[in-house]
Each structure stands twice: as C-alpha cells, then as structure tokens.
Length: 88
Image (cartoon, rainbow, N blue to C red; front, top):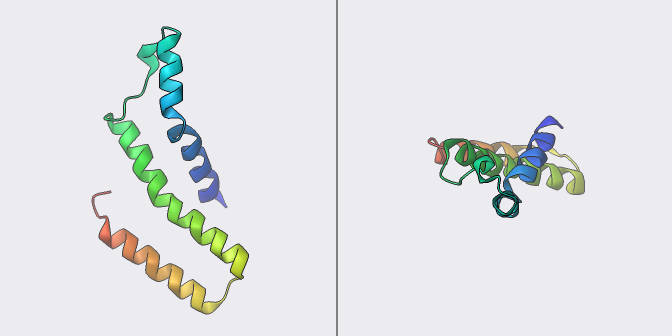
C-alpha cells in the first residue's frame, strides 16, 4: 500500500520535528530548521492528517475483513472528508 508508506514517511518527518529542531539549534545548525509557519511544513502536516484516515481504514479492513458494507462506509467517509476540507 503506497499511501501507507507515504503516511509513515510523513509521520517520520512531522512527528519528531521539535526534537530535531532543538538538536539542530544546539549544534549550531539552526539554518536547517523548518519552522511550523513555513508553507512546506504546513503542507506536510495537512497531508499527513489527510492520509491518517486511510491508515485507519487499512487497519479496519485488516481486522474486520473486507465486506460490502465496510466498503460503502469507507467510501462515504472519504467523500465527507474531502468535501468538508476543500482548502486543506
């Protein structure tokens, strides 16, 4: 599942950003810090939040087993999430 790989990659960048920032500052490389108000960081955070739903759906399917009701439920949730967040 490529989206799970993408989600985990984003999670590995976004989650530990504060400890990484602090370490970069301590060793004198603050120029490499990515600040939370930068467009690139905001985009990564929003993308991770969006993909998080798919990760939850994957866990649900692997534990419950795929069936038609579950597929309809997931499709409805995805449509609702996309419609409720047009700007990101």
